[in-house]
Length: 252
Ligand code: ADP
Ligand code: MG
Image 1 (spheres, rainbow, N blue to C red):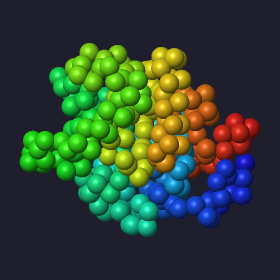
Image 2: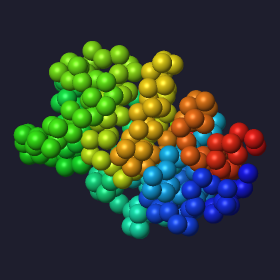
Image 3: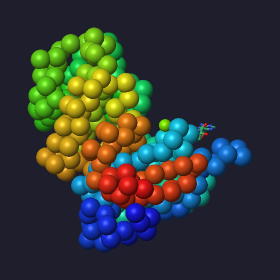
Image 4: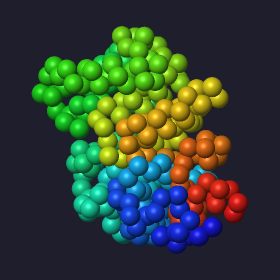
């Protein structure tokens, strides 16, 4: 396995592929703790990239720096060719980053469909936008996505009544509503039962293939990440210690 940034063994030829996300020597400290230590990673258009490593390795902190939830102490972050390092979170979201969190962000009291329509408008989250009637293209997009994950029959159900796995699928398609350039997923498989997990893998693959969604995901479940990712980065103690295809990572 090679840890060179331009690994000849990667599944995609990185020199010929558009870079959607690049972190350039990003460091984030919390007091005396260096949670993310000089990390350089790239995600190319159309890839599914995994980020793995033990608990406390700095995976979620790296995501927080990318989304502008935290500001990096050092290094630069690029989205496509734009330097977004010091941009506020809402501006980065509007630039095309979707994020699925570990904890659920669904409004329990609202219908599944209403959650989807709100998610699509989130980038413009002021009251005027939220009160405005969603346009037909958003409504048809919500229909299409609900069908796609087999939740069409539950569109009018209160989201709080869905199973945990169904809520995860709902959050996944909520993020797809806005057709993000890049979707970050923090442990999407967490707490999901095995049969729902197979569905989630299938839907992530389909979103990647049919919608050209570029996906960067943190995952604990090794079977899941080995099956779904084109390429994997490994973090430990905040440092990037390896990069490669699932086979290369597994054989290391
Ligand atoms: P991972 O997602 O890989 O499990 P995290 O990024 O959540 O790891 O955490 C990396 C390290 O940074 C851990 O030691 C964690 O305790 C610490 N940490 C994370 N967030 C904060 C914070 N807001 N304040 C202080 N320490 C934090
Ligand atoms: Mg985490």
